[in-house]
Image 1: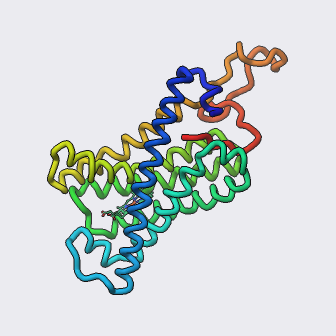
Image 2: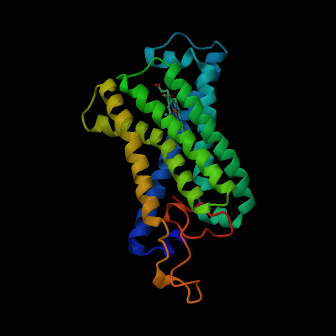
Image 3: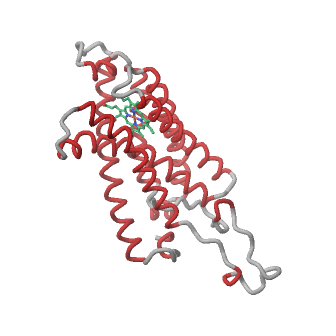
Length: 260
Ligand code: HEM
């Protein structure tokens, strides 16, 4: 609640409502993609054991590349479990050591999952329009970049920037879950029956929507620069101490990747 209580951009009730809606959506999306990761992991293990017959063209791409799929779905499964826990404020504050250990694991998982996604994008026969190759590669590389950047910030004790890049990286991963909900639930309900058309639509909109919402949350909860009026009376000269990079004021002493 720290990011909400200390916020003066939006009314507290609005931020609380947005936070609750965000958490419900996030847990649902993690559940969906975690379940899919579990199913596809089991499928790949069966494929490796040679226990699966030839399948439809979509599944055949996974059946013939089980190792690469496992390299993506096992980290994906852990990503869906550890991600939400990592962002829970009370867990972070009460168990800071756990937060640090699971944070390191989570960053490694995020990077591994992103690298595997990039390789999959290049190695799998592309589904839908060719542009999906470009967007999927860009999204995978963005996820890797976000977690590497988040890690560099936390090593340098720039906790505010660390929080922002963790949110961006996690949102990039969750865009895949949003993709699945749109593809299998929302677009069919809207009457779009053709699978390829649904695939192309979701591949184009899922990432910008999910990462865009995360970016709005980051900006709504980012601490403001301290203005001269807010500066302590004994501050040197007449102006406030300089703000950190990205316009964020001095970071707290303890790790504080705040709730998304
Ligand atoms: C931006 C990051 C990501 C990108 C670009 C990406 C990309 C991909 C690609 C290209 C495939 C093969 C899809 C296909 O053409 O059939 C795939 C499959 C899959 N991905 Fe990801 N992925 C990302 C992150 C994640 C994350 C974070 C998870 C889990 C939390 C995940 C779970 C899965 C699963 C379960 C499959 C198998 C899908 C199925 O069974 O149909 N992915 N991903």
